[in-house]
Amino acid sequence: ECLEVIHVVDAFGDSERHRRAQATWGAAFATSGGFTKRVTATNEWHRSDDERKRPYLKNLLTRAMAQCASPNDVVVWTNADTIFKPESVGEIIDHAQKWGACSIRRLETDGRTEPHMGRDAFAFQAGWLTKHFADIPDFILAAPCFDLVLAALIRKQRGIPSGKENLHDDIFPCEMPTGTVMHEPHESSWLGDSPVNDWNKKLAREWTTANMPTLKL
Image 1 (cartoon, one colour):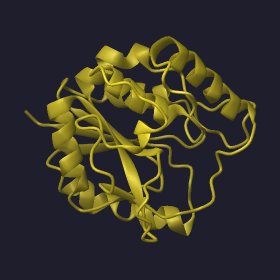
Image 2: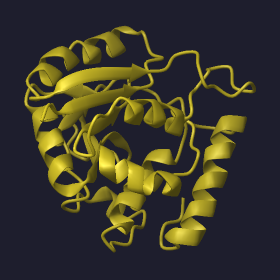
Image 3: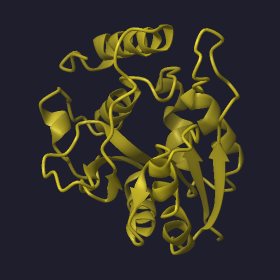
């Protein structure tokens, strides 16, 4: 069976930092053992009240799932500035095929040892995504909360509760080791109030209230 690996990314960034990160993708995906396609979004699927044209996560995932030929294929989501080590993608694919889904926290390239709570990569077996797609809120990318809720959803399927404290932990097999992917530090664009940020926060509150009351976002 020929494994399909679908890389999903909201490729809105075009700075030097983004280009340096994306320069690592070719070698990492080339050694992954699967035939890779990339699903990107720049100016499509965005909210009309958002000047940055940020896309809906599930629209990208739907497009990726349509390109999967088997439930064993793997969908890898990353930010546009996620840095892969040469061996990272192969390790991520193996993990997703064995365990169904996982999230990954980054390490910063400036040598900081305290990892960020946010997730910079997810991997899903196509069959896992099909089974749990309806459980994912209609989040918008490049805005708060969606990654923490996705991480909590992956844990929920294994009966593991999440709170802000243990989201700083890598709990096997729901998370891969921090540092599997890297990231250049920069000022966050997710801060403050906006229609998009408020939308994601609202969906996150609704999801946590119904599914994970230990998680206060």
